[in-house]
Image (cartoon, rainbow, N blue to C red):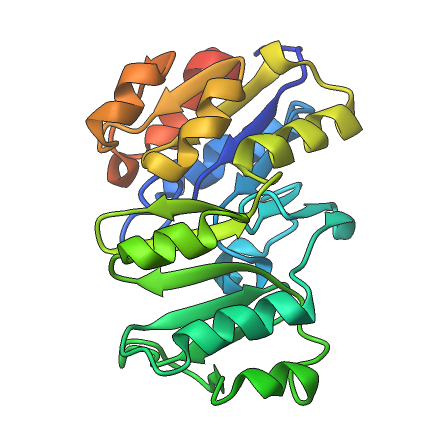
Length: 255
C-alpha cells in the first residue's frame, strides 16, 4: 500500500455514482484510501443543499468542494464560501420568473425553484417574485444557477459578462467568475498542504474539465465524453462498474 498522502476529488453523477447508486467497490476503496491517510472529497457543480443525503457521510468523505468551487467544507467545517448578492439574485429572477423551463437557484441550505419538474420530490421552495429575495428568501445563500435546457443567445450575452457559463446537452449552469472546480480544488489542497502532483481528480463531463487539467493525475470514467478522455492521464472503467475504485487501486492502493 502507498504511504504517500493524496487528495482525491470526485465528481458525483456518472463518476462516483451511476443511476443514483454508489458501487460497493467504490465505497470500500474510498474507505481504504482514507484509512491509509489520504483525503477524499466530493467536487461537484451541485450546491451543498443539492447534494444527495447519501453522500453527506463524514465516515466516507473528508469534505466537499460544492457549487462549482464556491463552498469548501472539511470535516464538517466550512472553510470558504461565496454566495450571490441580493441584487444579483433579483436581476436573475427577473429574467427567469416567467420562463417555462425548470430553473433552480442552488444554495448552501436550500434550493429555490421555478417550474420544478414532476420528478422532483419532497417539499420544494418556490420563487414567485424577485422581491422574495428581500423577504422570505433574504437569508438564502445562493451560490449558482441551474437552467433546464439551452441558454438562448441573449442569455449567453447577458449572463456571460459576469458568470462562467456551462452549457450541457440537456441543461445549463452558471457561477460567478473567479470560481470553478479547479479553483476550489486548489484552495483545498493548499489548505491541506498537499502538492498538485498528489492531487487526483476524476470526472466524466465538460464541467469537470478545469479540475482534471489542474490535477497531477486526471482520471476519466470509461463512460466519459470523448473530450474528457482526451485530456486525462488515465481512462478507468465505467462508473457503474466501479471506475473510481479501479483508479484508486491503481494510483494509491497499488493492488
